Image 1 (cartoon, rainbow, N blue to C red):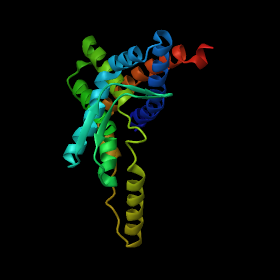
Image 2 (image 1 turned 90 degrees about the vertical axis):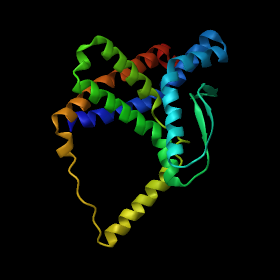
Image 3 (image 1 turned 135 degrees about the vertical axis):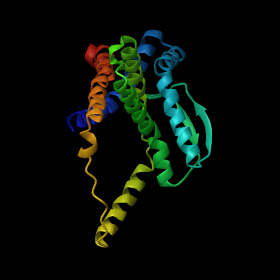
Length: 222
């Protein structure tokens, strides 16, 4: 449970840092270039693979759930102090489908990270420096772009409210969900190793983000 908890604590910290990093980088590039075009190009170059995966995750989830997808954009946009790395237009739908479409980048991003680490651990690839660098780059890209925006999660409140009401109703009716013991899964040696490597590799984007913020944020530069 230690590495499992550490992995998701690091994800929460990364979520908080990733919002600041894109904003700090946009301010930095604009300050040295005085050009929005150069700033957008630099941000697109740095975050394009992660942005592509993020927006395609929304689109794929919408398609699988039968929701129409409109125009997609992969170039960043700067709106005041906010940076929007990309966007995809999705037709209006019910709260449940809207939630899963909005949360798709986080779900798919986490699955890709864990799947990559699982495959790498299982095949003992961590002795290969090229693989370590490649996995580190993948973690940095996905880690900084996998989180959903406030607009993406518009359906979350309605969905969670519905779930809570259903659980209360089940409780009052005397219905109980079957108990699941997560320790039986998390204590498997291979699963523990995957989350151990995951918690180690998440230190890569965390460290890079912290360095960027400390070196480039005006607050810390004085």
